[in-house]
Figure 1 (cartoon, rainbow, N blue to C red):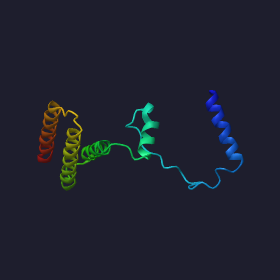
Figure 2: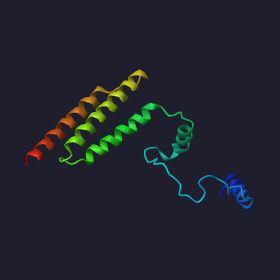
Figure 3: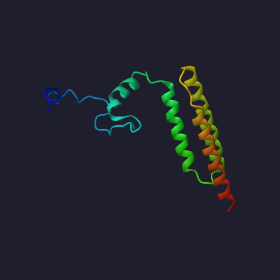
Figure 4: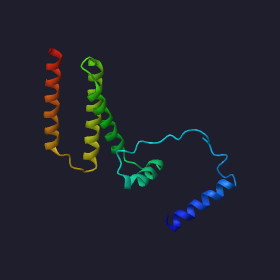
Length: 134
């Protein structure tokens, strides 16, 4: 343990001995941990500080929503036709919104990726339709 870590540990122990943590809200309750698996480990402290200060760009939130909707869509079964349609609409709306936000910031949207993505979606749709027919 380095000197700064040792000093921090000593201060924490002093505060605990003096009852400095006894009246904290949520004492005795489980912590609500955030899923930070999408953030590289070395960037997590900075990410949390920016999030707590309300400084994260909206693109990040929309991008996370796109990933969540894609996962939800992948988990749907062919019997969930209504849910699939609703989720696809929401996903398309979020993707369009994200693309517009990126263009507003001057970030390049790679057309080749969009074309590749549409080819994958078309293929998955054909496979799904053929499974329904079986």
